[in-house]
Image 1 (cartoon, helix red, strand yellow):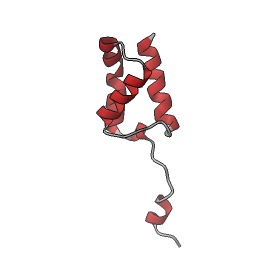
Image 2 (cartoon, one colour; image 1 turned 135 degrees about the horizontal axis):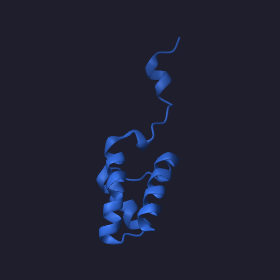
Image 3 (cartoon, rainbow, N blue to C red; image 1 turned 45 degrees about the horizontal axis):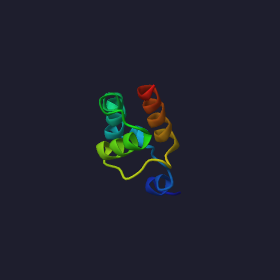
Length: 74
């Protein structure tokens, strides 16, 4: 029987479960409204706030970001 650590090593954890990322997404609308940030600038800001280098390969996080940015930029 495999131990729990071996079962967990291949599991992906989305940044959508990270409180720093979620807080950055929640603050994104104010950031975009105050700076007229384009998508690239908003992406960089979220990475800075969440202290991550990238989340473009995390589909759930990317979708959460893009939906929030698109709403704010409208």
